[in-house]
Length: 106
Image 1 (cartoon, rainbow, N blue to C red):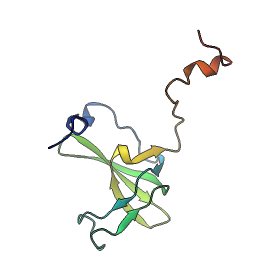
Image 2 (image 1 turned 90 degrees about the vertical axis):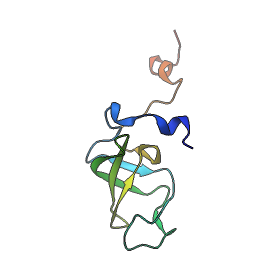
Image 3 (image 1 turned 30 degrees about the vertical axis):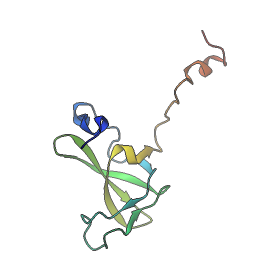
């Protein structure tokens, strides 16, 4: 059974990452059997690895899949947005909007 989060359709919005964008893995990714030439369970990407979005596709007409080239590993692995963060975009943490005006809110 899918959780509510898995039922949302990502492709109704623009992709979170663009081609050429530098990203970092925020989770370990192991081969689930869909990556050729590697054993099932073998590490494909380690948390903290950095790479570049090479291409953007979709899966089940629902999710974006980002083909990320992991330069240090010499591989390209399909990743979901929830497994990546951008190193090119500055993301503002929740509640930090008031800090930009000298630290005073209002």
